[in-house]
Length: 589
Image (tube, rainbow, N blue to C red; front, side, top):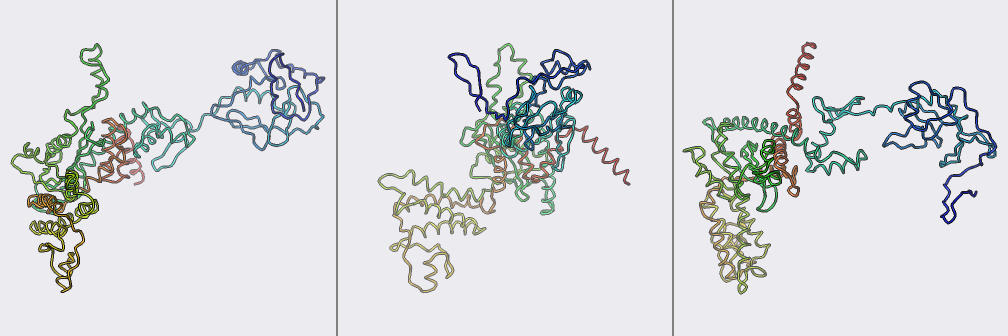
């Protein structure tokens, strides 16, 4: 049907609302007479209605009740039609008065305050007579206070319990669910932005935690708790190491074998934060660590000496710079700190060191004479020694002249370099004798550089089961097979110095123990999974990540979380719980 709308001349006609009406209200129906207990002037604001209802001087008239007086829906809630009928729902959601369906015909007149509500089914009329809502019900609906939102408290076993008052952690102003959310997102290598995105996708909150709140929890709660937990875990590891050495050697004193290696927060040689860690070799337990940093963002942006507020700022500033050395010397600096405090902290001496080919740390410790007359022993990681073959051969190819290239067909290809690297590693692991190791390394060189015209297989192992096809054919009285590689003479001449240098007795002596730094590399992997290298982080964040990684590495994830929760508790709460547990035990007995 058409709608008659008034509009000003020259103005655009307004589009009528998409409301279907089954009958037009009669203009001749008189307005209902106001009741004797109502006032002539209706309040037009919810505050006015609430005040009058509270005093008891006002009883609203349902028929003339204004829409402006109806209480607004709570923020974040949306009114949804249920069973295709309108309903009057109180704010506290305790009583719901359904709107009865109109039984009138299409031509039945309606009162002037009747409304037609558009739903998916046929439109229905809801009038004040049909609602039959008393003034007391309306007063209760208007003046009622919204019910307290139910909040949930996370329990220790992962469940949840409803609480009507608050789910703040006992003894803290922070909610436990917020703290656990920060801990969970931090343990996965993410930050405050990822936590906000997670809550948005879960339709919980599009705001999440503020960045300052997130950092505040990290500095005030998680950082100290993680450091304390890591200290306890490392102390337990030191006691376990002493027991292991006492079982292996009855004459054990204090000297142990450790793996030491350093890592940096960012890739390259310009990182401001590094990590040095000591791991006992036989047990694989991490004993101690330190995180050096040569940069403080607060000192860079804060007041400088001579400013008026410098002294006041200096008293409250927590500087994150603990060393002045560059990133290249952080590994050596961290080693000095860790080795110097081993006797005082654990009553242990790290006399045998398993490290990579870098000798700066070893020579620095020898010059420092950390343990007095006790000498250090250096053992190389077999995996790092194996990589040197590939690194040196690639360097030779890169430095070759254009007139006589060493790379390409008939020369050192990448596939051949990988094979020679693998053969060198097998030679290091194949024997405990230095002479046998040296013979195996040079046998690889002569075997690869041999040709049909000049065969050199004297150093290859003899016998029908030899890996050398030519010596095996010789043992079986078979014809010699053709040589496969056929390297050019200048390529063999360029390879010889590399093989001689990597087969020196001093190097092979350090590789005789077949020790590796796999435990250290595993710890580094755990650290940078919690704190990714491609993310910016402060010293506090890196220290927290390293502490949590150490707890995981030594004790596992479950005990790491339990120790961190225990360390985060206040002493008063811990004593209170212990006292309660003791009383319960006495009552049962």
